[in-house]
Amino acid sequence: MLTSRSYGLIQIFYGKLFYAVKYAHNSWHKYWVVKRSIRLEGGSKIGIHHSTAFNLSNSNIIVRNGTLKIGIDFGYFDGGSYDSRKDSCKIYLVNSSLEIEGDVSLLPGVSIYGINAKICIKNGTLINGDSHIIALKNIEIGENCLIAQGVIIRDNDGHKLTTGLDNVLSNDIEEVHIGDHCWLGQRAMILKGVVLHDNIVVAAGAVVTKSVEAGNLVGGVPARVIKENVTWSA
Image 1 (cartoon, helix red, strand yellow):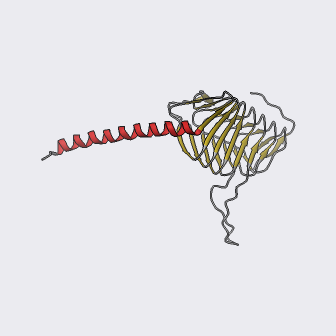
Image 2 (image 1 turned 135 degrees about the vertical axis):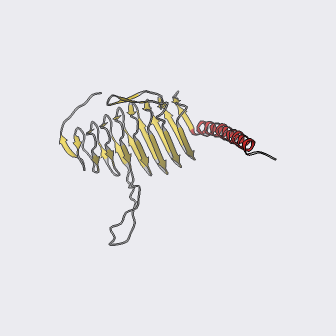
Image 3 (image 1 turned 90 degrees about the horizontal axis):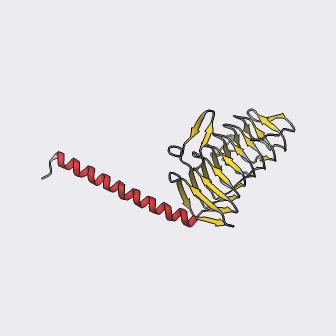
C-alpha cells in the first residue's frame, strides 16, 4: 500500500517522464515536418533559431536565390532589443506557401500566419520583432523594405461583420501588395486591399486603409498623404 508521500514522488516522476517523452516526440516531429516542408532553390540557405515555433500543414517554405534568417539576427527598437532567447518567431501555415526571393531576415518575435494563402517576401527586406503578417489569400512585400516593430499586415477583416440591415455577414478578403523600398513605421497597420507603390513611408501608428501612390509619406487614422516626393534611407 502506497503512502501519500511515496505516491506523490511516483506521480512527480511519471509526470516528468511523460513531459520529457512528449518534448522529445514533438521536437523530432517538428524537425521532420519542417525539413519536408522547406524547399531551397538556386543554392539558397536557411537559418532557423531553435526556439522558432512552427505549425505547418500541407504547406511549404520556399527560398529562391538567397538566404532566409528566422529569429537569428538581433533586433533593436527605441533603446530596447528583441532577443531570440525569449522572443520566438512563429510560423503558422495551413494549405499555404511562404515564398522568399533573395535575402530576407525575420527578427525574433515575428509571427506569420497563412491559411489557404500565399505570402511572398522579396530580397533585402527586414521585418522587426512583434510584427504580424496575417494572410487568407495573398500578401506580397517587395524588395529592400524595412518593417518596424509591431507592424500588422493583413488581407482580411478577421471577423464577420454586418450592418444589421441586410443581416448578411461578411469577412472580406482582398490582396495586399507592398512595393519596393517601403518603410513601415512602428505599430503601423496595413489593411486588406491596400497597394503601397514603391518608396512609400508609413508613419508610426498609421492605419492604412487605401492604396498609396509612389513617393508619398502617409500618417494618421485613417492614413492620408502628409508629404509627397519623399526619399528615405536606413
